[in-house]
Image (cartoon, rainbow, N blue to C red):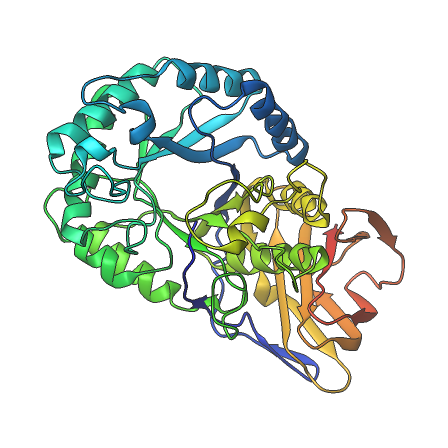
Length: 439
């Protein structure tokens, strides 16, 4: 997670009176879609307490976890590996049928390129690549028997100095050597490029043009915290405006790889309500998945952090949870549960061009997306930043049943539709309306 930045995707369309103009034709091919939940655990955490989080994962029906396996935790002294707690953590996850996508990072003091006894070194590149590759290999080898580990990610948010106090060439060597070590120890494990704080085309190009990197990883992930750690003009709707360039550079330099948003969230800091968080999740997931190359959403995080827990960063770090510190559910918990019920279907086709939204009066700031599920049902998510009245939502083809869902996941059968459109819909400012349309 990051205290930074910066931006990305253009508007899905511009609502004129009675018609929609889109910026680009969507990709009609069905694409893989998946979700993960993020929550970091430190070595020695109470596993009975961790299992309470696993129960929440299961309620959300998100059965994949992402978090850190810290080098500083599991090789605290050179050559001394301590995986006992980690084995038990992985086993508890398996008992709950939870799959794991850890990232390896956080350089121990003894292995850091620089840093004295009193200086933090966790974000330093390793001084000796042999130390790093030994740790990556020993970790993958030790955990190889646990079949619920799907992949290993190499460090995290390395394109920003706060999280990686090195350059792209140093990261490239760590990525290439780490990937080789992981695959040598566990041939089934996939390797992920470390998730980038934002879609940083320059960084990816520099890394992938280094020797040994092009075939070293399987997935290229980015992170997204618009409206929490971005300027006021950067929103969920325009955060990915630079993603097309990022994808083009990545494809050319690295070879085509799946693009994941493997970390995203919205903090309920003072002045930002839990209802705003819930609306943000619907807006963000719809916007991100509408990009033809985005295949994965990583939900950060399951619960707020206690205010007395040290964190790297600032106040929003404490308030990104879908639940409060005591696991009391925020409204967004139910919204994310709804979104995964509707969209976590293995594959989805983006069908924005088959959706027409029109309104009487001024156009406002409208957005609309439609996704087609493998069962043929269509999921429609529509909102207007300034609100709109008497809106008509129309789709290609006919429908026999339409269900609307509120942000807390409650369904309501829609009876006022004429098989091809819903009419007379009022949009409150920045509040998505969510529909399932069935043939």
